[in-house]
Figure 1 (spheres, rainbow, N blue to C red):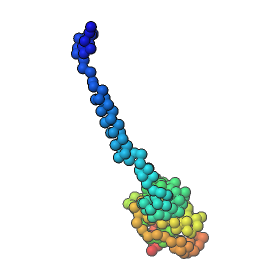
Figure 2 (cartoon, helix red, strand yellow; figure 1 turned 180 degrees about the vertical axis):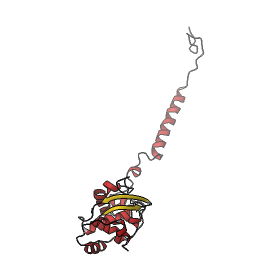
Figure 3 (tube, helix red, strand yellow; figure 1 turned 30 degrees about the horizontal axis):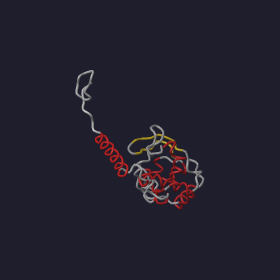
Length: 191
């Protein structure tokens, strides 16, 4: 009769593992998974839906673009094609609006650009741009033009005053039916 502790093929002694050790291993494994499940937050509803409704979520949203959703929408539909959605412009096509002295400068000067257009060379942030901007804002209602100009002046780190609908109306009335675009020199004369 052969010895149960001895392997017949190799002659090695084999020790049997007690059943209680397997039971302990499975109990510890189960306890570890349970502890991880209870304390990790992976399946906690507060991790995936910490707010009860959209209104509560809006309270915690950062203010971006001056909170001007109308201005952002007009910008994305009318201006972003040339000036990019991030306001950094496109090489050889349109100058940047981010940090631009034209955007941050006189509101009266800025309103004139989309109402009548801009032609010829213009310096923006130390770089010369020789372009022709059509009167993209001439067809916009006064409140939309005020909203988009305010969006430009208060987005992407720009910090300038808002432009009101009344300011746009006043300059539109002053320009009348002007069909010629402004030059940079002409706009520099505007206070």
